[in-house]
Image (tube, rainbow, N blue to C red; front, side):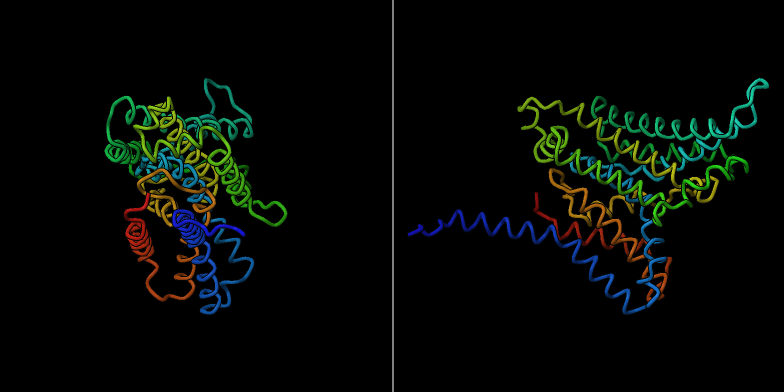
Length: 337
């Protein structure tokens, strides 16, 4: 005859069940929203609309994957929108300069495009590294560092564009266009890239020592130091990963409009953080899932899409809805670790 489970065992089972139920919350919310959207407007459930929602989700979703690592480690980055704007402007500025030629030497358009993409990724990594160094070696709070660079990045772009717009050369724009507009097996390229980045992020977070170290630092940084985890190095790498993710998102975004302005990437940081939080990552750090972030990003895009299709409230209030969602989820998470 099996002994009756102890009170501690029952309590543990109840906690695990509650945790799984909480983890399913974003998915349940997404399914419910899709049902509501379909009932409100038949166009919502069409394949074209779904592809459009996922394509627009890709940019924020890719950035949110990198943001997941930063928030789990106990950090934050408020500058990703401004960073994307500066990377886009710098990328266009470099490619236009190479297209015009240097000392009478011209470059093949494909070479220029390749150099521009590599430059964007490297620049994103360098910006992320700078954030990580200022936070870890400079002992400055992440909020302060990234709030400062938020203004710096956008101001530098405004200076580069002379207050206007940096527009990609037409010949390069035609070659670059398929990066955003082309499809593979009927699925737009940005969605494929989003899936690859999300899968890679989930693999790193759940299946590597680095991922476990990120979660340990977010749970208790002091204990992580006692456990011989190289806390500063791990934190720097999380910001570098986020910077590279911003670079990837920017590479996909530039061919959409072919230009960069001082308003490019505006409020992307709000959308990225909202995606991470809605996806179940604890704002206090120490716990989170990349798949939850992916669901959170799609959920927010679905909300915006429903507002566009139904006009329940003004589309100008999209950011307000996202702000309310962040506050609500933070309220639900209070005391959770």
